[in-house]
Amino acid sequence: MASIRQFRTALAAARLGSFVAAGRHVGLTQAAVSLQIKNLESELDTQLFERRAQAAVPTAQGRQVLAELEDLVARYEQLLAHSGNPMRGSLRIGTLVSSLMGTFGTVLARVKRDFPDLRITLLAGQSADFAARVASGELDAAVVTEPPHGVDASLVWTPLYQEPLVLIAAPRLRRKSVASLLASEPFLQFDRSLWTGHLIADALARLRAAPDVILELNSIEAIAELVRQGYGVAIVPLLANADWRHGKQLAVKPLPGPPILRRVGMLERRHHGKSAITQTLRGVFAAAAD
Picture (cartoon, rainbow, N blue to C red):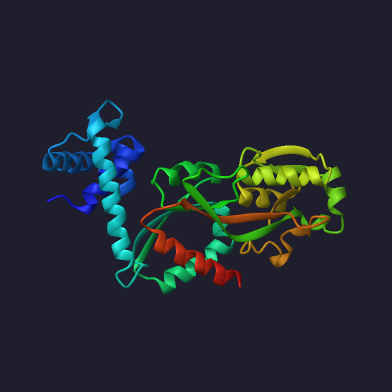
């Protein structure tokens, strides 16, 4: 008899476009995925996929069946959520590496302690990449910076916490002002193609600063390490758990004027079967913020 696990495997293959990718997603070999889907097709007496060299494409009838299977899986997950312990099962979350050094790292520790029956799988990446992966169902949710241009109507972004932008410099430059540092020191720029990079570029524009950019990176941690070694200065979000001031590793300076904040939130589909879990997680974030 077909199982929820087979349904999930077939849905993963449809979302990701291949049995290989589906196997990586659900933790099976390509051969095991192919066997599960073959058995499901046999039981349903329906060909769900056209097999191609590097792809699996749902047939016309397969798309209809897969839509019904997705509804069945969502309803099953809702039953689990209302069976007395909603915080059990699994959750796949995309996350910024920097968020693990911020408030999200603190929240994860609390969740692991308070909800031992919940298994969270984290996938590190960039905010812009996660939107499509959440929309497709590959991820249940993602912790990302605020989208600069909004999100698709099928998604919702809920703010969780915020981090002020600051200038970081080597300790020997501690007595210099932000304006003088931006005018005189080499600048390490966070990748301007990413959402956080957009925010930093806006901050430079507000400060009317045009620093000498010598390197552009997509890692806040790598930038902080280079600044610590004296390669230049940078504007970055002040991560809650980075502890940059400890041992006088870095000079951390607030930017002039009103604070410029990087807002971090949870991105998820407007309707999905893990909503009871993500709602509880948002509550843990709120408690951590308080």
